[in-house]
Amino acid sequence: MNPALSVIIFTTASGAGYGLLALTGLLVWNGMMPMDRSLGVVVFGLGLGLVTMGLLSSTYHLGHPERAWRAFSQWRSSWLSREGVAAVVTYVPACVLAWFWIFDGEMGDVGAWYGLALSILSLLTVFCTAMIYRSLTTVPEWDNPLTVSCYLTFGIMTGALLLNAVLFLFGGSASMITVFASVFCAAGLLVKLSYWYLIDRQKPRSSIETATGLSGLGSVRPFESPHSADNYLMKEMGFTVARKHSVKLRRISLVFGFLSPLVLSLLGLWNPAGIGAIAAVFAVFTAAGGILVERWLFFAEAKHVVTLYYGERKH
Image (cartoon, rainbow, N blue to C red):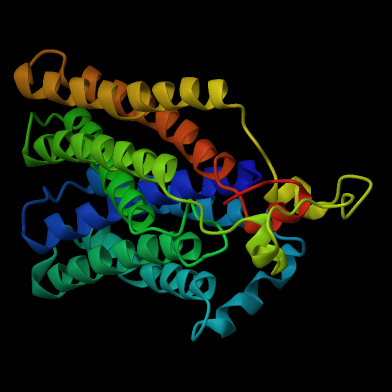
């Protein structure tokens, strides 16, 4: 599939933003978040800023961005529509919670429940985003349970790294969030390795024989190409990445997206009073770079079954 920059930015930025909001809401619900007004401004500024930037970026991939509002009406059958509805609804508890935190300086029982609602809705939005791709049975690389696991794990991981860095910069030390970030870096590494293991070894579901309905007649090959020039389907659905480049980019993704932030987070646990804050900030930037590469590969390595009609042998 064509790895469009707008969709890569959308899934990376919004995933981190929703992960940050989900963890913030959970900590507020448990009464474990310090109610510093400046901290609230930074946390909600980052969370809502990343979410909004990601959502706006996603509209640039549409042929008619001005018609994006129509997607909200299809929530009964479309995961894209459900994602849009969930994303908009999430702004409600986020804005209410930000108001309590920044202007009132305290939460109370009502604020705590809004925190829980924010956490649930943030994760639900990421789940809907993942299901947009998981539900596409015509793309075998995405049609597996690990697609949803990747989106949720990476969102929580990047959100935890962001929150950990912010708490360190506000004079905090190693905390439960530091441990949480470390755990989810390791979990993200395992999930992504499992995902690649699965798609590299899955058996082809379709071939040119099954696609044409001629599987009972032996080997089938097209007499000529369906089109004499590149078209939309080939540009969007038939994007290919060389195996040697794929292997190299996978390694870059693993090192920068998971291993480096894991080591840096553990460094913050080991030496919180010294370089913990510096390590936490570097962990955010390395993870962002690695996840951007991972997102690019997520699209570049996926192939739509329509490419069978253009010379691909199996999917």
